[in-house]
Length: 181
Image (cartoon, rainbow, N blue to C red; front, side):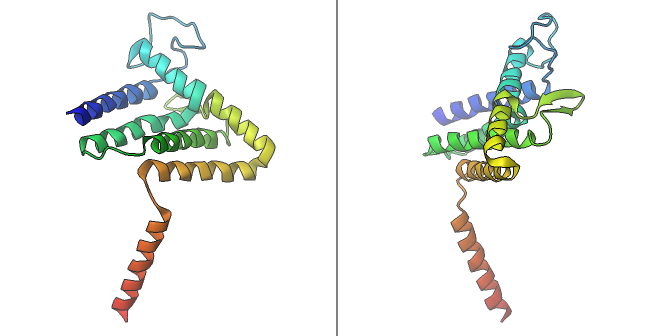
């Protein structure tokens, strides 16, 4: 029963973040603007406007769209009874995935327009670290670092082992070669 409650709560946060993010409007009342509070375009109202502004503008930019995806992944795992043992590594991997994605979007421009809405590509935090890493490692070094963080994030979140993958692939190739000869 406890895992089902956790799964349902995670599913709620999937809907909350997804609907808040896709209906994000920079003109809504938020942390950095004092626009009209009576008219909020966000599907989750004022709360959704604050949530979207915090995660998209202040923290992660477009990388924030990983949040509902990751929450959905974890919700399904809880419903199926696969409660992860290594929650710390999963949280760290999720952060790397979200952070590196937002920072990689910052390479081309700081703001992007999607569905006639302007989004911060990396968020204030992501753009700050993007600028910092590019300053000290140049563009090539920054690309390598962000790709590394992205891959580490994927590996930690889905518990993917490159060594197991290569061993299984090698064995399949060998068995296929044996079948042919």
